[in-house]
Length: 69
Image 1: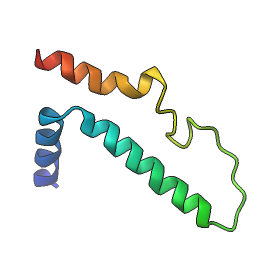
Image 2: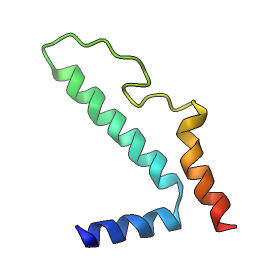
Image 3: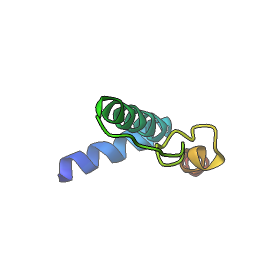
Image 4: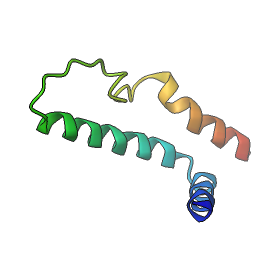
C-alpha cells in the first residue's frame, strides 16, 4: 500500500490531469455496472461523477498546477 501511495503521488506531481482521468474512469465503471444491472436506478450526473463540465471537477487539478509554478 505504501508503494501504491508513492506511485500515486509521483503520478500527480508529474501530471495533474491524472486526477481528471481517474474520475472519468470511475464514472465509466459506475455506468457500466449500472447498465448491466437488472434494477432501475435514478441518479443525477453529480452522483455518477459525470459532472465533467462543472468547475469543481477541475478545481483540484488546477490547484496542483498553480502549486508547481
